[in-house]
Image (cartoon, rainbow, N blue to C red; front, side):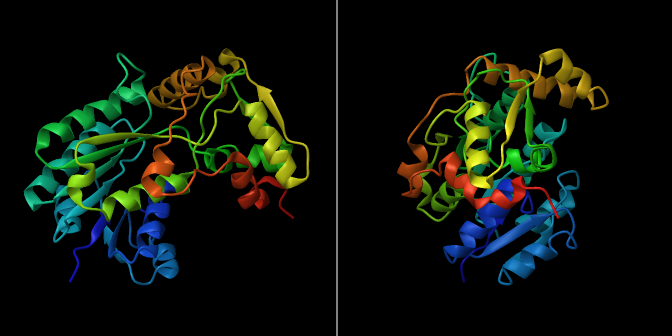
Length: 293
């Protein structure tokens, strides 16, 4: 009987797509969820998966989740504890005899000195590299799905995207393409990708204005990009925790300066399929960009 592949963050934007991609490949999937109740929707979609409660802050739950597992897709929550949480899982995975960890990192994690988000990921990357557990790193750019999950309400209700990115271009990637790469690596021979780091991008670098145009064409209604001054963006996040506000503003500044525009062919080379365009994404999610009845 095949060993299950553990997917952490299994109900999130990327994790849920990894579960789907692995299931479609016939892999046995163990979905790590914060609560079994929260994972019910996953089980309804994919009855064959295993659900396991996984709390990064409770080593006992990690031991249970990793029992009998040979491969892991490691996605930690976006939180100030993500470094400690990532290291904790790596420690338990090593004790459990895990043979391969595919870590979801971020584009630019290897840059020096880099931004805070990148430094957090790099610290876990370095820890993983020194752990002795075979690993592969996935470093995607910003997700297209952020326009649904973070900007969907303002788009559907106001027809506007508010971001402080100026004319900066970003090689946005569809989370489904990240999942396709992850599933391909997690079901391949471990030695094929051991020690590798892949930069995952969409097919082109786009300004938010270009994104707004694609969403307008797909939804059949005008959607405008509103370039928010940095100070206004800071004021708009005044009630957010300082670590969250500062790290997001730093990321936005990097994108505005054009440092997130690099395009690679890693998605097509690793998954066998060209990455989705912003137009394809907009068509697939068009209902999310129209006012609710």
